[in-house]
Image (cartoon, rainbow, N blue to C red; front, top):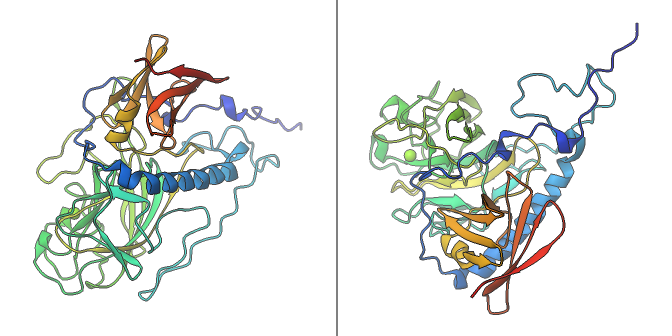
Length: 401
Ligand code: MG
């Protein structure tokens, strides 16, 4: 019997685009409560941020190169075996090799897996900032970071969609307060939308859907796997970002799977919308990739050994830049008009308006069309021109006076 080879391998460039390549939330009103402030002191922070972003971009490109090529899955999460391959297909590329993580002890954190993006290794907060993009006021000491009560949430500079996240946290060793007032913080995906509760839930009574490992206000954890306050605890989380269609209708909800200290406490839980103290708010469309944030709930909760692995097809890194930086780019450059829409820039080209995503501090791309725009700051920091392309070439456009 002749073995039917099945469907021919699909070149990657014509593979079905992941949902992330649609541009669903553009042209829709307010994407939610996240607003970048305008008080960022760029002169003070711009240089270190630029170095950080350049470094992170290089790491991202290396990682992307390492996992690119035919290995890319056609869709994530999969809904069935990849149709490009028949069973035991000898032509199917082997998965990338990853050195696994080492476990942490109370005395010291373990090592992330070799393909992880390290968000905090105990040394500095270079991957983090305050919600408006300004420097975080949380403190770093002795290999951990600690929430400074009253200083506000912190977020990653880089944005993430579907991902695996590892984080270690410790509630204050000397417990004070009770219920929600004891060792409270939170791990948020989608910037500030979807919270996995962090709380000292060791012999601390509170409502079930607000204790450690809860998806706040929606799902109690399956069990209470808490360790005593002061001890390091782990969350290992699989986050799937919600998807929206071009009209902003929900296609699939955000989902969370959470292991607390290695124990499953949430399994593929479909969120009803953003987590909220009072209500179960409905979804409002937002970009698939957004920063991850940590909550300041007034308690000096500590964190260490934070890393993330992006899931799904390889993609460019994306950053959320401060509004004050985005505003430097707003203007008309020959036939292109750049505007700011909340946390994002838009480009009007050829009568069409496209949302732009920041690949670095100066380089942006669209997802609905292969448009790349790179702003060219002069020696004085002023931006008088940009280089743009659609699919090919490079064109210089001068800022109009
Ligand atoms: Mg909380």
